[in-house]
Length: 110
Image 1 (cartoon, one colour):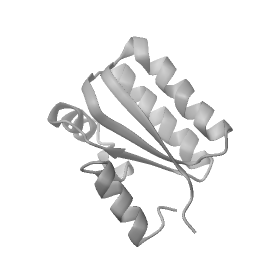
Image 2 (cartoon, one colour):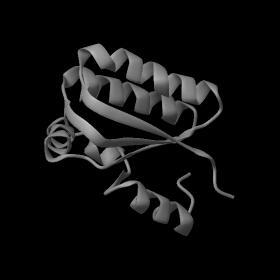
Image 3 (cartoon, rainbow, N blue to C red):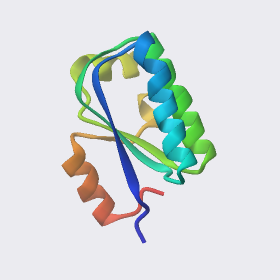
Image 4 (cartoon, rainbow, N blue to C red):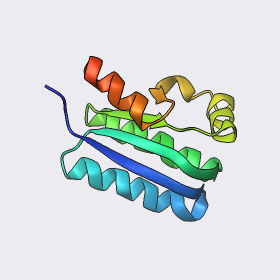
């Protein structure tokens, strides 16, 4: 049986100003009982170290809830930041939401 998934969309810059709200959004999703989360970066233009920190701390919260935090639609700069920070391997990454959905149809993310 497939678990429900919540898609969290990042728009514009995931930086210092937005990082706190991003973490709160993830915490709210977990508190509501959904532990399978897809962060969609399709409309994101940039992520700085604050955004990276928010993403990594959110991963820890999701993992503690025995869930999955997947990423999709990463732009080249955001992908490079994740690679340089050596954290990219901790996230399931998909080209887009359609690829994520297809992967979920084939097998469980848990």
